[in-house]
Each structure stands twice: as C-alpha cells, then as structure tokens.
Image 1 (spheres, rainbow, N blue to C red):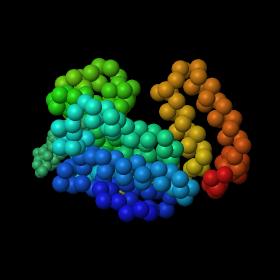
Image 2: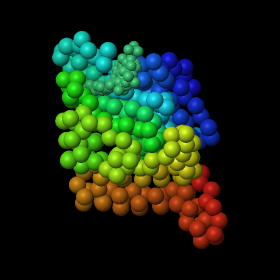
Image 3: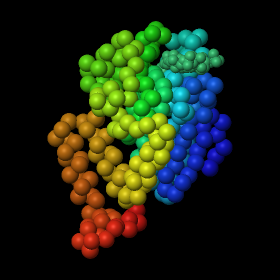
Image 4: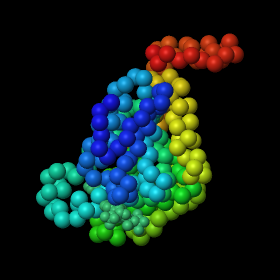
Length: 258
Ligand code: CO8
C-alpha cells in the first residue's frame, strides 16, 4: 500500500479503513487529501481481496469542509481552469461499497464526502451542514444534489440557504444517515457493517450497489429494468448457486466472489 501524507489506510481482513488525518485543520479537504483519498479508494477497489471500505475522520471532525485557506484567494479562471475538486466525483466510480463513519463536524465538503459514500453511520456527536453560503459560495462537491435527494427539498433548502447544522438524530430522521450510535462505538459499528458487506459475494454486492444508485440517476421504469437485468445476471455467478444451495442445505454460504 502506498505511503500517504494526509490519510491512514489500514486493512483488517476484507475491510479497509481510510482515516482522514489532518487533525490541526479538522480534516479540511485540500487537493492533497482529495488526491490521496481518491487514489487509495481506487487502489482498494482494484484489490479483489477488499470487500468494503470505511472512510472516517477524527472524534472532533469527519471533515470541516473543503480547505478554505487553499481556496480563499483563487480567481474564477483558476477554479474553473483547474475544475477545482472535480476529482471527488471519481469516488462515484468505485464499485466496492463504501461506508462513511462520521463523528463531529461534517460540514460543506465534509458532508458532501459523506454523501459520496454508499451509507453513513453517524456518532451521536455528528453535525452535518452545508455552510458554504456563509462564505459567499455554494456547495461544489455535489451537496445541493445529493442532499436534496437524501433529505428532500424542504430540509435541503433550509440547510443550504441558512447554513444550519443538523445533529445526528435529525440527520437520521431525515434519511441522511443509516444508523446513529454512541461516539465510542462508531468505528467498531462501521467496521462491523463493512465486514458484514465484505462477507457477501463481492460481484453481487457491486450489482446491488449499482442498482440502488441507479434509483438516483434514472427513471423508475429504467431503474427497474436495470435491476431485473442485474438480478438475471446474478444467476451467472457461482455465488448465486452457493447462496441458494446453502439456504436449501440449512448452512452458511461460502462465497468465492466468482
Ligand atoms: N478549511 C481550512 N481550515 C479549517 C477549516 C476549513 N474548512 N475548518 C477548520 N479549519 C482550521 C481552522 O482555521 C483552525 O486552524 P488554525 O488553528 O490554524 O486557526 C483549525 O482548523 C481549528 O478550527 P477552529 O479553531 O475554527 O475550531 P473550532 O472548534 O473553534 O470550530 C468549526 C470548528 C465550527 C468546524 C470551524 O472550524 C468552522 O466553522 N470551520 C469551517 C466550516 C465551513 O465553513 N466549511 C465549509 C467550507 S467550504 C466547502 O466545503 C465547499 C465545498 C465544495 C467546494 C467545491 C469547489 C468546486
């Protein structure tokens, strides 16, 4: 595994954990963090021995947003010319399921990074927000689109137009997060969820992830068609044979990811 400066990458069995590691800047997401997170996730995605990825931050901050100090003096032609932060979209091409484990601040780009993951587990200390408007900008890593899809127009407008932060419970009620757990159980819970996913057949988990993501990209009839085709395709795998045989034999399946 490559050496990184702003993140830590650990492997435990079939689960890998990427930890954002710029504590002095509350894990503010500068270009280096973006390049490293994306490179690590892509490297793990190419590794068939990795069945799920956890992305996490610190107790105080998942990430307090894009790095304001890096952006503050940039001109339109610079940010447009560099297509600033477009690289985060590459995470959407990672097929291995990604779990975000969020404690503390997940603001601006931090909230957007969490939403780029497949599901969010939040500590009871988590605070989600899109405060960009208070800085004279708007969300730029997909926040306006993914937040609106996750929590609906009313709450997305509330958060994006006022910069209001929501706590973990409100985030769970609103559909932004999958589970809320006590802060000291966050990482173990997220890793348990990731291990559970990693214990499934990887190609089937990828098909499942792809099918759910299609719900946010296409019409209902096209999405259902894609789902049915993917369901049919599952029958081409050994793991479908094994999964169903194991059920009939009343034993646990032994998936081989083939
Ligand atoms: N960028 C850079 N540095 C940061 C950031 C940030 N987003 N957040 C915190 N820091 C730094 C602080 O400057 C401080 O550094 P220093 O010690 O050198 O002064 C250190 O982290 C600790 O922060 P605080 O002293 O402020 O800690 P507090 O506990 O008092 O406050 C907060 C914590 C409330 C999280 C506060 O730090 C804060 O409000 N941070 C900014 C939050 C924010 O506005 N985030 C949105 C940023 S904009 C964004 O994400 C746009 C995304 C899309 C861009 C796409 C472009 C195309």
